[in-house]
Image 1 (tube, one colour):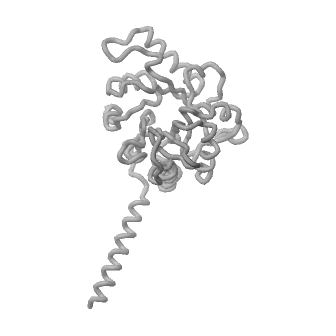
Image 2 (tube, one colour; image 1 turned 90 degrees about the vertical axis):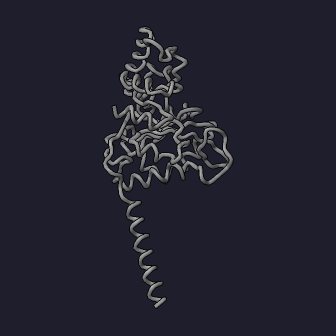
Image 3 (tube, helix red, strand yellow; image 1 turned 60 degrees about the horizontal axis):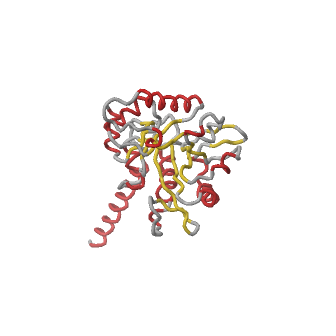
Length: 271
């Protein structure tokens, strides 16, 4: 009798385990994708990557450190831990997500998902290690091959202390650059530099009180127009993380609007 009960429990546990596995493999439910939504310092959330994905964000930021040949995700230089490797937090989950969603990060996504890496270590030293880590996942990424753009599930671009000259001197590849306002008007291929990002306080003084000065508004609109003319997206960083500024940027055509408070950004997007 005990043997029969044990076998019954084993079969029940096996069935339950298979059911859980099937659930985990299920592609996401139909959700709206917010292409403007950028998860700033995404790794600081309780569930890196997934908190943003669950809200429909289409861009996340991961700060990378090169330590003893491994890439770790952290804002400040971290203690070595296998729990915060770039592969564990982002590469592997993205690959599994794309497989579950039949080639897309978001099942209803019409555009590639943006993964921005902020290079906290020297970009030139990091680049060979980054390429080595990315190679098994290369099929995920947008790329330029023989001068032709090939769309992938994920567009990866480097900010911070990035290997700028190495990337710009390469005609082919799948690792691109986050540019700056000073790069506008210099005929830099948008395939190599798909995004223009810059510090809001370095160019703008308006902090949300009263009406924005007309001259500043026109200056900002000029940057956005020029970026769009060159086929690039525009993003401010270090801007106030408030609903007021999120609405303002969305209305003015800023393409990637950064948010630390994901729920607040989501509410604005739903308005």
